[in-house]
Length: 119
Image (tube, rainbow, N blue to C red; front, side, top):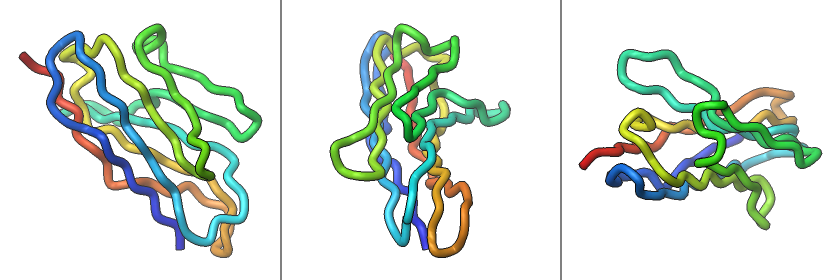
């Protein structure tokens, strides 16, 4: 069994910053990639940032220059540093992990953490 847990969401004013954390745990044998997605009310879930096992990262055009994705020193931890936040960044942010575990190779999702950008 693999669990993915996000934390760090909250209410922030426009122009502010937040740092989201994600931890994947359980019977993980190998982690291929981890990523952040978000889903705003009434919209489809969209990819925000990815981090591959080879160190490559990528960001959606809408967040380039403002967000940064990084892996933690602890295995299977992931961060999303969000700066210069805008009201349109308001969404539930989800972390996922594409891993090989005792249950096979699958993508696991966290429950999500709410980010609200408002004055």
